[in-house]
Length: 92
Image (tube, rainbow, N blue to C red; front, top):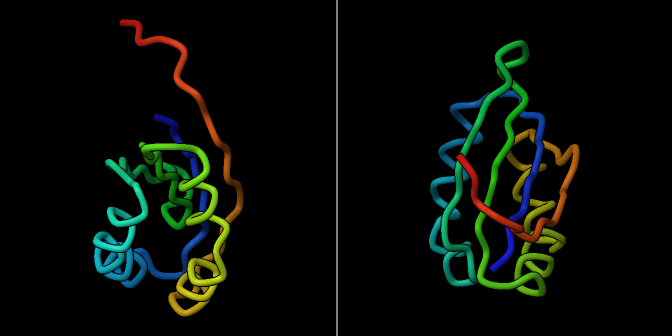
């Protein structure tokens, strides 16, 4: 398993969220296990998503695809940062 942290800027959250929900099946087919969405308190147009993916190679292939870049452009959103993470431990 791997995790992917993605920060994006959106013009219109509702429009982007509808497209994000629509892409759910494609993400699952590509190996995504779950996605946690967060919004910046100070800038509601900044969204961070923490994905859980079945493996790093599938995550990279999906996240760096031309299809994703086009989808984001179509909904007036852009990737600010992508970070690939390996979980080390869970702590409380």
